[in-house]
Image 1 (spheres, rainbow, N blue to C red):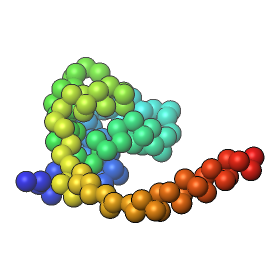
Image 2: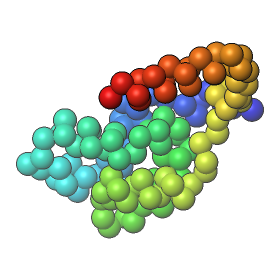
Image 3: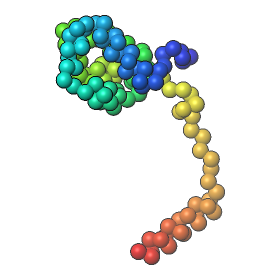
Image 4: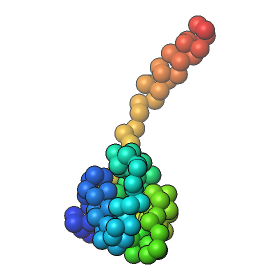
Length: 120
């Protein structure tokens, strides 16, 4: 059963990671980003981590594997997330029940496609 507390949106996930890493690395964490536009940092971390930013168990797994001496890159953090727990899927998301297509509709679509190809 899925735990609703395990999920958040990407912005909240980013804030969650950076709040925890601030507590872990202290002032070194703040200095790590000196001279860098923090909006760009947020954008790149969100791009690199994607859906991992929405699943707290993946983020926690990665945080628990951090090296205490070095702030990780977004790519390294993503690697930790990849090694962690799989993001569960809601059964509704993976259910695939295609509606059968009438063979006459398929035949008509193929006929029209052949016409279009012939009119090049």
